[in-house]
Image (tube, rainbow, N blue to C red):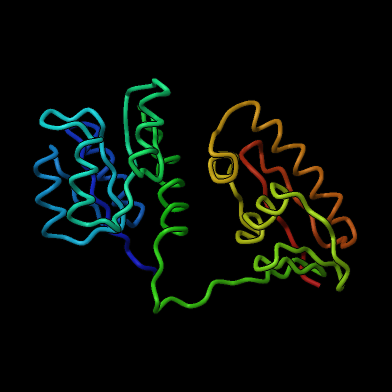
Length: 233
Protein backbone atom coordinates (compact mmCIF):
# COMPACT_ATOMS: atom_id res chain seq x y z
CA UNK A 1 0.00 0.00 0.00
CA UNK A 2 1.28 3.43 -0.92
CA UNK A 3 2.27 5.71 1.93
CA UNK A 4 -0.09 8.61 2.62
CA UNK A 5 2.08 11.68 3.00
CA UNK A 6 1.12 14.26 5.62
CA UNK A 7 1.11 17.89 4.52
CA UNK A 8 0.83 21.06 6.57
CA UNK A 9 -0.87 23.85 4.61
CA UNK A 10 -0.66 27.36 6.09
CA UNK A 11 -2.95 29.62 4.04
CA UNK A 12 -5.13 32.48 5.33
CA UNK A 13 -7.23 32.79 2.16
CA UNK A 14 -10.31 30.73 3.09
CA UNK A 15 -11.36 29.95 -0.48
CA UNK A 16 -7.87 28.92 -1.63
CA UNK A 17 -7.15 27.01 1.57
CA UNK A 18 -10.36 25.01 1.24
CA UNK A 19 -9.77 24.35 -2.48
CA UNK A 20 -6.18 23.14 -1.97
CA UNK A 21 -7.10 21.03 1.08
CA UNK A 22 -9.90 19.28 -0.80
CA UNK A 23 -7.91 18.80 -4.00
CA UNK A 24 -4.80 17.46 -2.26
CA UNK A 25 -7.00 15.19 -0.16
CA UNK A 26 -8.56 13.79 -3.34
CA UNK A 27 -5.03 13.08 -4.59
CA UNK A 28 -4.28 10.89 -1.58
CA UNK A 29 -2.51 13.32 0.76
CA UNK A 30 -3.41 13.84 4.43
CA UNK A 31 -3.74 17.63 4.73
CA UNK A 32 -3.78 19.68 7.93
CA UNK A 33 -4.86 23.25 7.18
CA UNK A 34 -3.78 26.15 9.41
CA UNK A 35 -5.31 29.58 8.68
CA UNK A 36 -2.53 31.65 10.24
CA UNK A 37 1.10 31.37 11.22
CA UNK A 38 0.49 30.85 14.95
CA UNK A 39 -1.88 27.97 14.25
CA UNK A 40 0.73 26.53 11.88
CA UNK A 41 3.33 26.57 14.66
CA UNK A 42 0.96 24.84 17.08
CA UNK A 43 0.18 22.13 14.54
CA UNK A 44 3.90 21.64 13.85
CA UNK A 45 4.49 21.07 17.57
CA UNK A 46 1.71 18.51 17.86
CA UNK A 47 1.98 16.63 14.54
CA UNK A 48 4.58 15.02 12.30
CA UNK A 49 4.49 16.20 8.67
CA UNK A 50 6.36 15.21 5.52
CA UNK A 51 6.12 18.66 3.89
CA UNK A 52 4.92 22.17 4.82
CA UNK A 53 3.27 24.46 2.26
CA UNK A 54 3.49 28.06 3.47
CA UNK A 55 1.78 31.16 2.15
CA UNK A 56 4.17 34.12 2.25
CA UNK A 57 1.52 36.77 2.94
CA UNK A 58 0.00 35.81 6.31
CA UNK A 59 -1.83 38.23 8.65
CA UNK A 60 0.17 37.59 11.82
CA UNK A 61 3.65 36.72 10.50
CA UNK A 62 5.06 36.40 7.00
CA UNK A 63 5.85 32.95 5.64
CA UNK A 64 9.58 33.63 5.64
CA UNK A 65 9.63 34.23 9.40
CA UNK A 66 7.26 31.32 9.95
CA UNK A 67 9.59 28.94 8.08
CA UNK A 68 12.45 29.82 10.43
CA UNK A 69 10.32 29.26 13.52
CA UNK A 70 9.17 25.91 12.14
CA UNK A 71 12.82 24.95 11.62
CA UNK A 72 13.47 25.46 15.35
CA UNK A 73 10.68 22.94 16.05
CA UNK A 74 11.48 20.48 13.27
CA UNK A 75 14.74 21.23 11.40
CA UNK A 76 14.17 18.28 9.04
CA UNK A 77 10.74 19.37 7.76
CA UNK A 78 11.01 20.51 4.10
CA UNK A 79 8.85 23.45 3.04
CA UNK A 80 7.75 25.30 -0.08
CA UNK A 81 6.27 28.77 -0.45
CA UNK A 82 3.09 29.94 -2.15
CA UNK A 83 3.03 33.62 -3.00
CA UNK A 84 1.43 36.32 -5.10
CA UNK A 85 4.77 38.15 -5.11
CA UNK A 86 6.69 37.94 -8.35
CA UNK A 87 9.82 39.89 -7.46
CA UNK A 88 13.00 37.91 -8.06
CA UNK A 89 14.40 39.06 -4.70
CA UNK A 90 11.48 37.37 -2.90
CA UNK A 91 12.05 34.13 -4.79
CA UNK A 92 15.76 34.21 -3.96
CA UNK A 93 15.00 34.97 -0.32
CA UNK A 94 12.71 31.95 -0.16
CA UNK A 95 15.40 29.62 -1.46
CA UNK A 96 18.07 31.20 0.74
CA UNK A 97 15.96 30.33 3.78
CA UNK A 98 15.93 26.68 2.74
CA UNK A 99 12.75 26.33 0.69
CA UNK A 100 12.66 23.30 -1.61
CA UNK A 101 10.30 25.03 -4.06
CA UNK A 102 8.48 28.30 -4.68
CA UNK A 103 5.13 28.54 -6.54
CA UNK A 104 3.52 31.78 -7.64
CA UNK A 105 -0.21 32.44 -7.40
CA UNK A 106 -2.62 31.80 -8.99
CA UNK A 107 -1.84 28.19 -8.16
CA UNK A 108 -2.35 25.49 -10.77
CA UNK A 109 -3.53 22.57 -8.62
CA UNK A 110 -2.32 19.90 -11.04
CA UNK A 111 1.14 21.46 -11.22
CA UNK A 112 1.25 21.70 -7.41
CA UNK A 113 0.56 17.97 -7.09
CA UNK A 114 3.26 17.13 -9.65
CA UNK A 115 5.77 19.26 -7.77
CA UNK A 116 4.82 17.84 -4.37
CA UNK A 117 5.18 14.28 -5.64
CA UNK A 118 8.55 15.06 -7.21
CA UNK A 119 9.79 16.72 -4.01
CA UNK A 120 8.62 13.94 -1.72
CA UNK A 121 10.08 11.26 -3.96
CA UNK A 122 13.43 13.03 -3.72
CA UNK A 123 13.33 14.11 -0.08
CA UNK A 124 11.40 11.53 1.88
CA UNK A 125 12.81 8.06 2.43
CA UNK A 126 11.09 5.16 4.16
CA UNK A 127 13.38 2.37 5.40
CA UNK A 128 10.55 -0.16 5.00
CA UNK A 129 9.90 0.71 1.36
CA UNK A 130 10.82 -1.73 -1.36
CA UNK A 131 13.96 -0.74 -3.29
CA UNK A 132 13.08 1.33 -6.33
CA UNK A 133 13.43 -0.16 -9.78
CA UNK A 134 16.85 0.67 -11.22
CA UNK A 135 16.61 -1.13 -14.58
CA UNK A 136 13.63 -0.64 -16.88
CA UNK A 137 13.06 -3.12 -19.70
CA UNK A 138 11.93 -1.31 -22.85
CA UNK A 139 11.58 -4.00 -25.49
CA UNK A 140 15.13 -5.06 -26.32
CA UNK A 141 16.55 -2.04 -24.49
CA UNK A 142 17.65 -1.77 -20.85
CA UNK A 143 17.53 1.61 -19.11
CA UNK A 144 19.72 1.63 -15.99
CA UNK A 145 18.96 4.53 -13.63
CA UNK A 146 21.88 3.67 -11.34
CA UNK A 147 24.58 4.34 -13.93
CA UNK A 148 22.48 6.55 -16.27
CA UNK A 149 22.91 4.17 -19.18
CA UNK A 150 20.75 2.93 -22.07
CA UNK A 151 21.75 -0.33 -23.74
CA UNK A 152 20.43 -2.20 -26.78
CA UNK A 153 21.26 -5.91 -26.51
CA UNK A 154 24.28 -4.98 -24.42
CA UNK A 155 25.44 -2.14 -26.69
CA UNK A 156 25.59 1.25 -24.90
CA UNK A 157 23.76 4.23 -26.40
CA UNK A 158 24.79 7.73 -25.35
CA UNK A 159 22.01 10.00 -24.08
CA UNK A 160 22.09 13.61 -22.93
CA UNK A 161 20.88 14.38 -19.40
CA UNK A 162 17.49 15.64 -20.57
CA UNK A 163 17.05 12.67 -22.93
CA UNK A 164 17.78 10.29 -20.06
CA UNK A 165 15.36 12.07 -17.68
CA UNK A 166 12.60 12.10 -20.30
CA UNK A 167 13.05 8.43 -21.21
CA UNK A 168 13.07 7.47 -17.53
CA UNK A 169 9.78 9.30 -16.91
CA UNK A 170 8.20 7.61 -19.95
CA UNK A 171 9.60 4.21 -18.95
CA UNK A 172 8.16 4.54 -15.44
CA UNK A 173 4.76 5.00 -17.09
CA UNK A 174 5.20 2.51 -19.93
CA UNK A 175 2.05 2.14 -22.08
CA UNK A 176 0.40 5.00 -20.15
CA UNK A 177 -0.15 8.63 -21.07
CA UNK A 178 2.22 11.16 -19.52
CA UNK A 179 0.81 14.66 -20.01
CA UNK A 180 2.78 17.57 -21.44
CA UNK A 181 2.30 19.40 -18.14
CA UNK A 182 3.66 16.53 -16.06
CA UNK A 183 6.71 16.15 -18.29
CA UNK A 184 7.48 19.86 -18.45
CA UNK A 185 7.03 20.57 -14.74
CA UNK A 186 9.01 17.46 -13.74
CA UNK A 187 11.96 17.84 -16.12
CA UNK A 188 12.02 21.52 -17.09
CA UNK A 189 10.35 22.91 -13.93
CA UNK A 190 8.19 25.13 -16.13
CA UNK A 191 5.23 24.49 -18.41
CA UNK A 192 5.52 27.00 -21.25
CA UNK A 193 5.57 27.25 -25.04
CA UNK A 194 9.35 27.30 -25.44
CA UNK A 195 9.93 24.23 -23.27
CA UNK A 196 7.12 22.44 -25.10
CA UNK A 197 8.97 23.06 -28.39
CA UNK A 198 12.15 21.67 -26.78
CA UNK A 199 10.21 18.63 -25.57
CA UNK A 200 9.19 17.79 -29.15
CA UNK A 201 12.86 17.93 -30.20
CA UNK A 202 13.91 15.56 -27.39
CA UNK A 203 11.10 13.15 -28.27
CA UNK A 204 12.41 13.07 -31.86
CA UNK A 205 15.89 12.24 -30.55
CA UNK A 206 14.54 9.41 -28.39
CA UNK A 207 12.59 7.97 -31.30
CA UNK A 208 15.87 7.70 -33.22
CA UNK A 209 17.64 6.07 -30.27
CA UNK A 210 14.83 3.51 -29.91
CA UNK A 211 14.43 2.79 -33.63
CA UNK A 212 16.37 -0.48 -33.45
CA UNK A 213 13.34 -2.23 -31.92
CA UNK A 214 10.22 -2.04 -34.10
CA UNK A 215 7.99 -2.95 -31.14
CA UNK A 216 8.72 0.42 -29.50
CA UNK A 217 7.09 3.75 -30.33
CA UNK A 218 6.65 7.10 -28.62
CA UNK A 219 3.10 8.13 -29.44
CA UNK A 220 1.77 11.70 -29.42
CA UNK A 221 -1.65 11.29 -27.77
CA UNK A 222 -4.19 13.81 -29.08
CA UNK A 223 -1.90 16.73 -28.24
CA UNK A 224 -2.28 15.85 -24.56
CA UNK A 225 1.07 14.21 -24.01
CA UNK A 226 3.20 11.22 -24.93
CA UNK A 227 3.08 7.47 -24.36
CA UNK A 228 5.98 5.05 -24.54
CA UNK A 229 4.27 2.11 -26.22
CA UNK A 230 5.90 -1.31 -26.19
CA UNK A 231 4.05 -4.05 -28.09
CA UNK A 232 4.01 -7.58 -26.76
CA UNK A 233 6.25 -10.05 -28.58
